[in-house]
Length: 188
Image 1: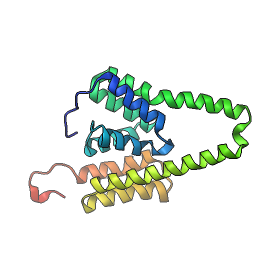
Image 2: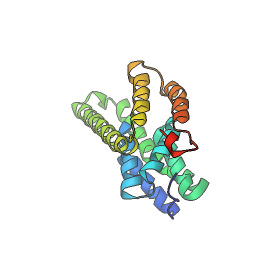
Image 3: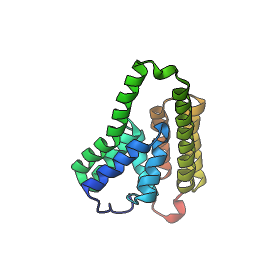
Image 4: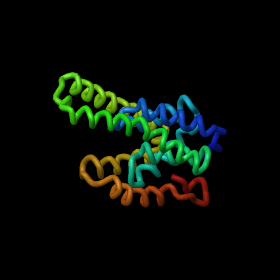
C-alpha cells in the first residue's frame, strides 16, 4: 500500500459506508466503492484499492463487507472496521427485510416491481463495466499484466472454474514473475 491512511473520524467512516450501503446496486458496489473511496473521499489511491480488493476477493464473504472492514481498520483500527461494517450492511439489511415483507404479501408479480428489478440489474452491470475499465487502465500497464489478467478470465469465464481455483493457479505464477530481482535489467 502506497500512501499513509488519512485522518478520518469514526463518524465520517460510518456516514460514508452508510451512504455507500444505502445507494449502491448489487454487483456494482465495487465500482461505487472505488468511486467513493478513491474518487470523492480520497481515502485510498487506486493501487491500495486494488490491493484491498484482491484480498477481499480471495476471502469468503461479500466483497463490499470485506472491503468495509479492511478500509475501516486501515483508517481507525478495529473500531473503524466495526463501524464501517455496520454502516455498509445496515441499509441493505433493512431494505431486504422490507423486500421480504413485500414479496410475502404477493407484490413480486407486480409489473412495477419487475421493472424496478430490471432497472437495478442494468445499473449494476453498468457499474461493473465502469469500474473494470477504470481499474484496468490503471493496473494493466505491461504485457505480463494483461497475460495474467487474461489467464484469470479464461479460468473463470471459459473453463467455468471458481475464482478461488483461478487465483490458486495464476497468483503463484504471477508472484514468481513479478518477484523482486537483483538488477533492473532482469525485471519483467
